[in-house]
Length: 134
Image (cartoon, rainbow, N blue to C red):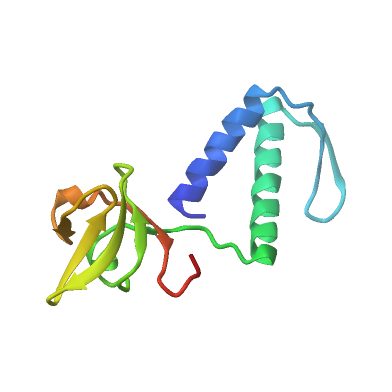
C-alpha cells in the first residue's frame, strides 16, 4: 500500500470509528469465526479494509486506475506533451515543449513555467495523459 493509500485508509478508519459502528465477531482467514468481540477501533479498521478492497475491485472492473502522483521534476519531465496535472498548491497545468524546452501552461495564466524550481508545486497528480479521451 502506498503512502497515499495508507493516509486514505487512516482517514477512513477515523471516520468509521467516529461513526460508532456496531462490533461483530471476526472471521479467520481459514473461514472460521474468532469468538472474541471486536473493539470499536478493530471494527472501524476491518470496515475500512473491506471498503478499500471493494473500491479497488470495482475500480478495476470499471477500468479506473488510481491517479499517478509525480514526486520529482525528472518524473514530470518524462511525461508526454499534453499531460494535465494538479499541483500541491491546487493549480492546474498542461505540459508542453517549446523550442526544445519543457514547460507547463498553468490555467488562468498567460505565461508558461519551465520545469524546474520550487514553484512547480510537487508532488503533483497526473489528471490526464494525452492518449486518454478528454
